[in-house]
Length: 388
Image (cartoon, rainbow, N blue to C red; front, side, top):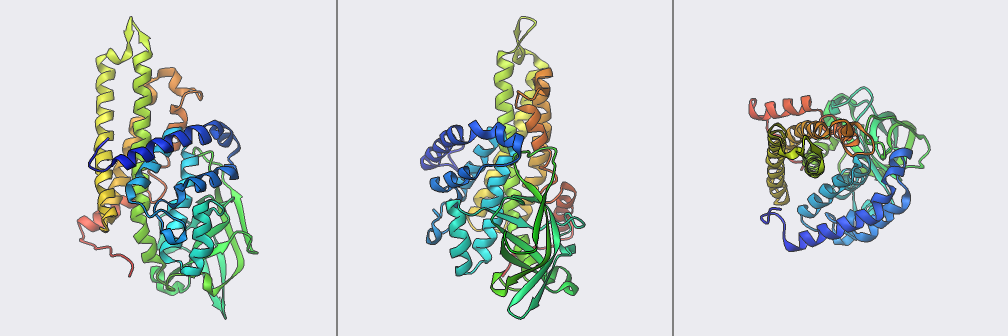
């Protein structure tokens, strides 16, 4: 572990988190993977431990800690072999809650952020649409102002925590003719009339509830607008840096977990009179995979440090997600191969890891979109700026 980024306090936190996950989460993982439903009690236990409040202000019950506590939380969540559980936790804590914290006014924070930190309320972020995918600016969901209310119509898809969350952070067009300059962000309670959700059946992330959500003449108070009207797109872009770095960190952590498991297996597995970690072909393949993981890990730490220092790291976070998720897929594929036939068996971790990892290059902006963003910044000198 690099002492450049992690203090003794960080490491004490990591150990207490590991202990908590092994005691409170791991015994339930198989059940949640099978049912696709994470039971409510664990959210409240996360809240009791302060895990949802790591990055948030003390005013609303948070701990206001540096970003490397979040890095530790993300890394350890990847090492209990449930990408779905991990996704449910970080989608609440760093997608929905980030918008509530950054764009919500005091009343919204009092109602939603405080309860999110304690685990009493679960949030989801609704951006992606059935016909939009990575084209955020092309969203069709509308929010029409009528007096002191907004009326929301449209649909969202691939929403993590889309069924069981208590509130939704929803992006919608308030001025469709302005394109991406006409998007706004709203918050609404799950039980608001006109909101319905359908569960989606997925290749991986089986423990998480991923939903398609419909809004049919949903009426919400105008005070549920977060931030300024028509400023939603720059808000979204600003927070994409954190989301993409999160997915980059997730990727290097699950690759590291796969390598740790594979190394232990290779040391114990005997073939032709010796452990298979003594065969040069396997040793060198392992060395290549390990080197790729370390390169991404160290890059991600450096980007996290810059983000923690207040730098606007859109390009670097985009690179983090692009390269780290590709690396994780390749490393886990190789680690499954190290296990031979056992890698293909569900009782070993690699099969689920492989499925869960495959979402990395898709969610939060596909690799194809990320390459175009990087190309625009590097070749066309496009300058993405923070929301003001």
